[in-house]
Length: 342
Image (cartoon, rainbow, N blue to C red):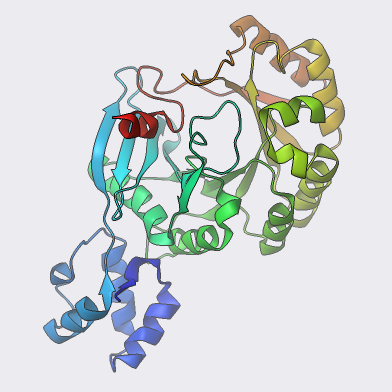
């Protein structure tokens, strides 16, 4: 059975070339071709025909197909639905900011976490992605759009820390100077709060930005909307976040979806202030995207503004996430759900 070539690191390719009796520099040539988006060995013109034939026998090159592409007329946000080699689909979103282009990628097909406000988790986890399939989302989004990618957020379909080893390898691949060369400080990883994996990630000391999906300041509310809280309650999550900051020196971003009547009152704000006191962090208030299958409603604009002011008055940095792609299927997982229902 042929192996997935693009999931290999440069060091692994160097070892492979040695096995094939080829000089080590061939590995770098191969790595560069793959991370430029070449989809066949025939396109690798500086490799000998005999080497290309050997590679063809042993390896395959991944390349997703565009099933659907939506582009916002308001802000230029592009949402892709990619079909993978086994017919499963994942979503990727390209967002344009003044500081550069950010791509939001998926780490799994479906999601096992069951958060009440998220379309990605409806239907559960289908499978975890391979490193190549994560790289491809960045690479082919850039190639299709013609835009250079400067930032990556792992905040699409799936829980990145549920696919831990794959995500670490993906980070190594996109960070490689001979590949896309995207620095760790330009990468954000979002988690719903898998405490043992947060602690393990802290030990990696990767200098990326950790975004924790908090969404509620107390266990009762958080457990209602995020089943993971029943396993890793706030009494375990918050110490893990503090340890992460102590180990890495990187300020944590807390994601907080504003849900009308559920987590957006002044009392909730007071609890959140107490919960985060003393921890260098940033709170990202997110106007809730509507999901057809969910009864949850977004907070009113004036409620969001009051909540933000309450946090800032207490000394906590808080911003309201800019709403992008409001005229397309902006909520994560919605495009995939519509495609599956058809």
